[in-house]
Amino acid sequence: QVQLQESGPGLVKPSQTLSLTCTVSGGSITTSYYAWSWIRQPPGKGLEWMGAIAYDGSTYYSPSLKSRTSISRDTSKNQFSLQLSSVTPEDTAVYYCARGVSIATIRDMDEYDYWGQGTQVTVSS
Image (cartoon, rainbow, N blue to C red):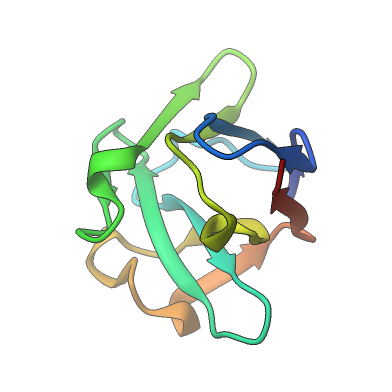
């Protein structure tokens, strides 16, 4: 059973960088052909795919967030991380990490088989 757990600060000030880590257990983040994504849900809105890091370390980003987003991984700890720079209150959301079954379908929310419980991040001064 694969489990994912998000961790990081729940409150970030405007203009700062939001940093979250997803710790994966029960499966390796280097196993072919999975993709490991960050997905968020602002209050009252739908899920938004932010970006992913694939089993081979390649990264993919949402065009709307690409200039502010960086996803990396630590294979020794079986973790992957998100950094979102220059945050504003519009970045307030529940942030999820999830495992996608294929790079080809990383933008399809129906193609994720394991999700973290989500972590609330609020951007406020």
